[in-house]
Length: 208
Image (cartoon, rainbow, N blue to C red; front, side, top):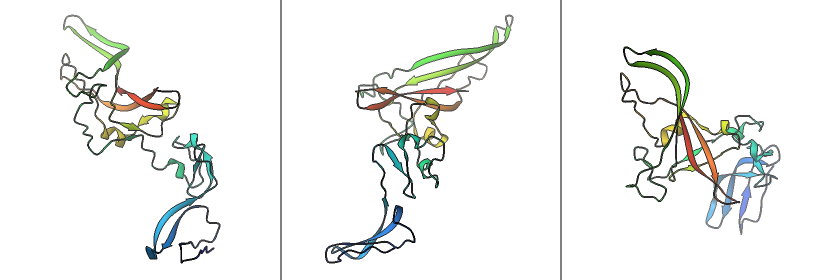
């Protein structure tokens, strides 16, 4: 198929065997670009706010975007599913500022310890072994989150996203080797700031 318009004003061409729906490379012509420039465009009948457009032009419910399931035949609904974006000036070695933006003020971090089991207890040695989980919750207003879901199990950061952000370091000074926490996964939660907008404000860190 070849589509042409009057080149005196502007022109667009594409050569495909089927209908030009979906993502294709188009050559655009105009008086400023008489030889044309090539760009990718996606033509589709999808509803902007309610549906996601697959690369082949098919439409799926936007809630199925980045849900770890292939809803598009070409699996394009599971591409570019990063959940966190950091700005150019973001430094993950610099602690998050207080909520008022003051870097000199203390950042509020909520610590939640959940004991799973008591493995051993030696009164004579004043030593005990405990299996537990620690949850650290804090707010980092420098971050922007993407592709969040209502189901919290779909909001864990992968290893690449986890490398981008700052998180509190927790060291146990009363252990034999002063062990630090080992991060296994991150869980992102969101908070309503108005009846129309969801803005992610807090994250929960779950060490092993």
